[in-house]
Image (cartoon, rainbow, N blue to C red; front, side, top):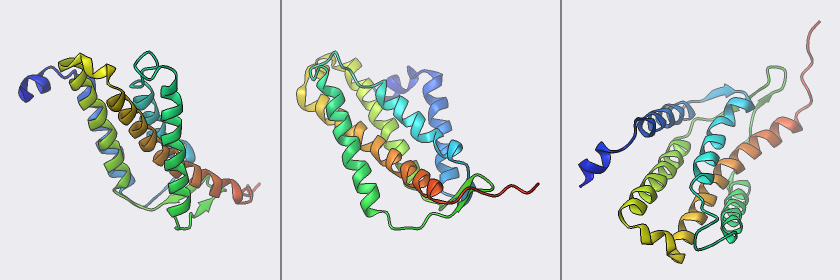
Length: 169
């Protein structure tokens, strides 16, 4: 059964997984990075989550409140639990990102969640109408997105707190 599921998985899903693994590996290395590049993965993860949320399901429009609650909790946790200083180079337009395997783990968790929900929905369509499953998956997507958004927000706030770089003439 698993081999059948894997065999019917479209190529773009495997390409997305490869991209996420690559970006996760990059995030594991210390590096200077622009805020625009730092925003790529939170943006991709946001799109993955939002395309999985169904406002026509059992939660109706309340699905957005459940997702937003998950985001808010995770952002608050990231801001309150993150203690590390963020080095900023405004002149170069970069921040120094300490390497961490956490982004890779989060990306894989979102990928696996989205994949599992897709397979589960295809095999058992009635699960879409389950309140506990819908609520749990929606809040989980919100928590995942909130970690990425909170982390990006910390970097952006540190960047904006620094005086603008002076450009030599």
